[in-house]
Length: 266
Image 1 (cartoon, rainbow, N blue to C red):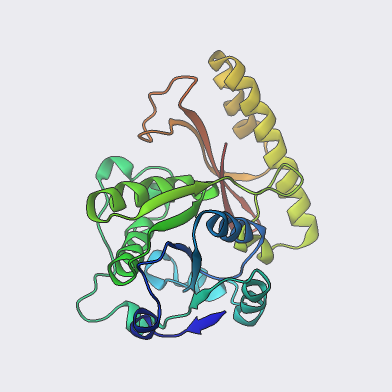
Image 2 (image 1 turned 60 degrees about the vertical axis):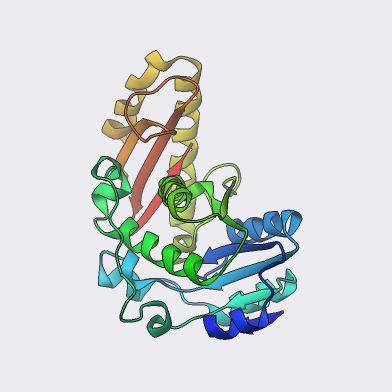
């Protein structure tokens, strides 16, 4: 495994004519990231993983400061997985004078996290734009857990790059709470509480999928839960609108355990 701290050096030493898959991360790796890497290794000849905590996608400085930083542990995980290349760039290299820190998104997509985290996805697209301009990768691997992020990145890439976006399924703890870097900010009791609530939402969604007339059950969760819910919304997975059918229906969830914000979708 070769670790690069410079995009320029990586470009000089890596042959991008090969089938190289790209897994962008912010570190604090978990089983969800490991699944992305393994999917990439199955499809591509070589795997490139980036670790970069992107400040422009945090709409609150406190979130950026509290984000888990576990670089040494992350490197050990990637080495064990036999990843080919790891990129750990610094902020100055990513955001040069001519690099935008934000890329605008269509107003109609400023829903869900786009509504409650203003500027977040604009920052995500900015760093993806920087990476794909600099790295001529064939495929990029993204997790379904952050479906809205995947949706926006896919639409953005389709207009600007030849890179193919590969969506990988959400990896869950005991068929409930998805693995997330933010889980590391919770104690075991809080994890169990989040798991129990997630399982409840999953069961309700299964009922709604069988018969969409059961959407009233979502209001019951909102009214009777002792958990702070930021949003619990049914939307069309193809365009994020509220006009959906049973085939394109997706449930988006965001809730808080203590002060930790958790997102999910089903």
